[in-house]
Length: 420
Image 1 (cartoon, one colour):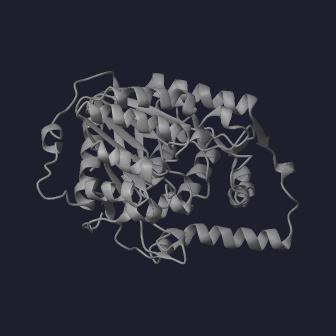
Image 2 (cartoon, rainbow, N blue to C red):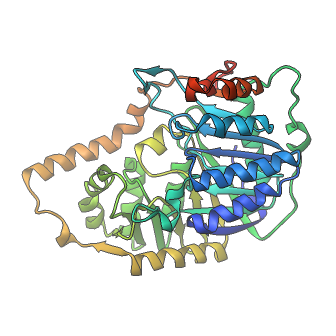
């Protein structure tokens, strides 16, 4: 169960320019263990930078477990994967699933977390994938996003969570002993004054934990709430708390996508604009480039950074992870960064910007309202297959290097695992 832990330090990392160098530095210097989970890993300059850092750590003798999502990271080359495996990196593929005419059949329940733990001393939590589209030089499609570097006792909670996810998802080959037992019991000493909570969402016991903490924070807010979220179509209860807070005088602000990477994202969010504006919520559309962040700050003392969007996928289907932080200094910094976005890179949506009301808009609002009330329950009707972790074995790596014609499908030659 999630628990508040004191004595932590958090450093805000904005975009790939701040995130990647720091993560690669920590990984490359690892002495004992690297745990990594990511939804997307591309074989571009960022993916190759991660590859190089992992190889350095592996050559030093560190145990490395890297988990990628089978849907989000489908195109890594044979050479990329096999060179990691041959160096001793254990590469896990979350729920690769059978393919039908080349298409993945398991479309739901994605592993959307972005977590890194190095030597139980440094952890990274956020929404940034390992891909070059998180760097400004990618061009107009470069994403705006956030992560945090964590030091202190809560790193042990994140590490233990990642070990449990690995243990539940696969068995190690016979004779291969994990170093986890050596490091799982370690708890780092105090590194700062922040209290923090590590919160996850799954499809078993923690189906709404992240959403619940959002609701608690908004309900407790007395002055200001700012939420920056890329994919915004929240459940009815979360939407209701935002409107109630605005009506009682809280300055509630939303930063949403104005230049979305997928047009349907803006269309879906805009269906809620009239209802939110009528309640007094202020809406800002970020227009410089696609917004990919998943952060919030409340009353200058509460903040959250993580992988969870506020949409049906993140709130009802995907596996997600956020860290919640009680620290005035960190909250003030995040607040300042978000204020800069609103002042210099956003357009505020006004009531007059909305299309004129019509009978169709009334019907559409009615349908959207009731969908929001029900979709969390409907999500339970979708296929809830038991996700698997696929462990690419050393023997597989040898086969891959000698039989390249088999292509990327060879990476998935595995021992079947326990349900994750």
